[in-house]
Length: 243
Length: 392
Image 1 (cartoon, rainbow over the protein chains, first blue to last red):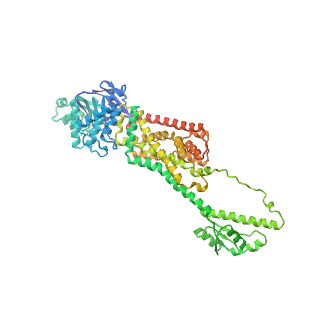
Image 2: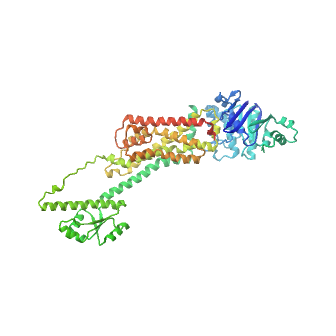
Image 3: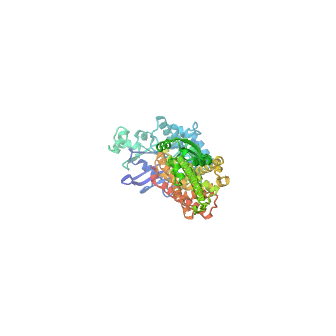
């Protein structure tokens, strides 16, 4: 479970995140929806501990990300916006590197890599160097790398950005599989359809503030709009340029 | 500590597979110096050896007016080319390069010589050209020799002791040892060694910092439960490893090159065997972490591979500055200078090559100063990596 309580972060004159609170539950996919520059990435970066909030706190499975950073991070898998691989290492070596830094021993590294290879379908390229990977192969390897320590929570920042249709499809399947395993999945996107298709719960962010936090179902029911797209637009107000 | 070695292992292996790193760290950096050096030195030596053995060539005009001088020159082994040139023609010939040095003997030489008055000769040379300047210097010496022997004969004939004309007898003592003389030539070898040390780690320092950012793997790495100091430490350690390999290769290159360079032709001996090479390696070792930390720190501030390359090329020049100052002011090994990294290594290496004994304190101060500065730079790098701006 991931909890954000009253998070605020300011970069110079810009208030990137203002008093943001929400909860992402286990066994659910939570989507953070917002326009570019709305504060989604800043929010997620605070949650996985590379940015320090000016105010508020973030907890992973009840562990404070500032106070118990090492423990909290061990419960968390991260797929940042830029999830580059090491081109001169094979997919397996990429996964092992992160696993080893997570403190996994050799035996556990092998068994986890074998498991993830099977689940994510990496068999055909696991021992190839990452340099020539397709987008789909890259995102699968990056996801395996983020999951190697078997975290209960996973945060993904705009994971579908720049992916082709096939890669988006397999990513979607992977996220649903993670949810089925009872993990807490939190991802950000500016694509409404994607959030609508995948998420159980949506947190809509605009200008650094939470505009709505509800299940997809209740948003649809609450508003009188005919389509989900219109329902989202009502929540956002017309100023927000969500596509 | 475990994380530090994991990072070290990964950076070392990854760069072993990178052609750019290999070429610069293990080929260009360490071997460029010895090869260029070997070529230059053997060319320089060949030239000076050949010049000393070669007979002097002078074009002479008007030799019929001075048969005595002509005979003396020939007896001294000077190769004379007889020509008929006016002063202007001689100037043109030297300028064109068709004659190295022209000696013109005017018509009035004979009568003045017979009258025991100063008899003029004209030496035409081009002092801007090192080749004809050397010949002109030698010609001047031979002419002075002729003049003084004639002067002594004249005094003797007049019943005066020729010793009266020699009020001071100058005796020269040259204390340069054969190895000492070679050091003039070996002086800039030390810079090639320090250059190789830095080149060895250059690409790894870039790749593990700016490269990591550009590839987009940095943020994922920073979100791991690993202390930033361990990440930085592992990266600097891997850079150090490549720098040590480069240093070892460079010194081996010099050992081999010195087997083939004909230093002994000039009566010099190059004191560079395996044992000396090991001593030089030990002297340079404290410079390795300093260079690695400096390059990693500078590269950590840059946004891209290209930007990092631009800045680090200037870093490569940093060790030249103290060495350049040292040669301008001809500084010798002394305790105070041991606090300056790169200069202290340069001076110590030069001392070893000169076969001088090292002062233990100098060696410790040199190592201590370099390692202390290295530690400071590492702390600064780790601190920078803890900042939020690292994400870019």
